[in-house]
Image (tube, rainbow, N blue to C red; front, side):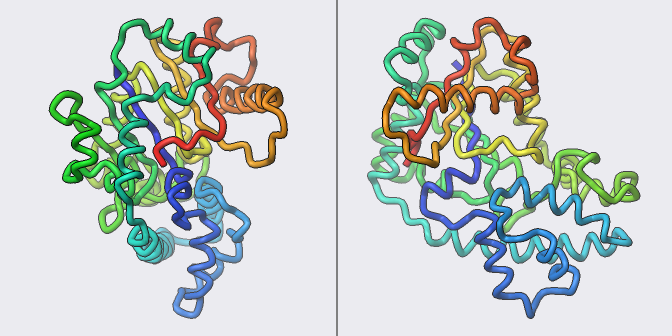
Amino acid sequence: MRIVYIIGNGFDLSLGLKTKYSDFYNYLNQKKEECSSQLKELLKEVKSDCELWSKMEIAFGLYTKNLKTVQELKDLYGELNVYFNEYLLKEEARFKPNWKMRYKCVSDILQPDKYLNDSERQTFRAFVGDDDLRYRKTVISLNYTRTFEQLINVKSPVVQAAFNIRAFGKPKIIHVHGELNQDIVLGVNDIEQIANEEFRNDQLAKEILIKEQSNQCMGYTRHSDCERLIKKANLIVLHGTSLGETDQRWWNLIGQQLTKRKFFCIFYFFRIEHDIKLKQFIAEEKRKEKESIMKKLGFNDPATYPDDLDQRLYIIPNAKLFV
């Protein structure tokens, strides 16, 4: 069975890192006197209450209407990129995993269905049959940090023992948006998210702003590699991601696979932020989340849902996956 984990910023937040956009905004505000006038103007437009990175990226695409030339865009993007890299490197350096964290992460990778309830696990096991869940795993990280790599560092005896590397193999990890101290990609999903219409027709502006084209112009195959992996996957595990608009291509692709292929299912891990006093109330929260997810995957009308959706979409609240 081919399993693809897609992890977002919620993963780093669960490790205690301050990686919300609002955290970065506060960091930039402290360095305000060093910033260019253009970056100061951007900070006025994109306030600190914009906690999700996807919302910030959408706001950046909208801000392009205030830029007159592609050179201004280059300068602003370059400056933002430098500060962004600098801040996240400091946050990443704070993460010091211990053996318990490593063992937990590896254990969860080998047993992706452990957080299903009894009924869900029975349904899922009937669906997958005799397929072994321990093999063929890939992690697509939407993050720039290498925290996941630190958790599954094969030099650790704990990881080697838990994984049985020779039998199951180490999961491959792809940072589709790049990594710190390398060529990171911070941008939008498509030209519709670029407010400056002149930039929509400018090759360099699109290479700066549109994530897929940014990867392509640097010679990376990260987008095509991830697309191929999703198309071959039997199980997609979504953790720590809000399914934001600036990564819409991935959510559309997953939605298409849900329609096209019968042996394809999804685990979606999410947090219920408010208190749930009785367990019976969780089902309602899961129904709400299911409707929200399906819209993001491209299903606006419940009448278009696959008939066997309950066997192939599992909504998992408040599980401490990996940590």
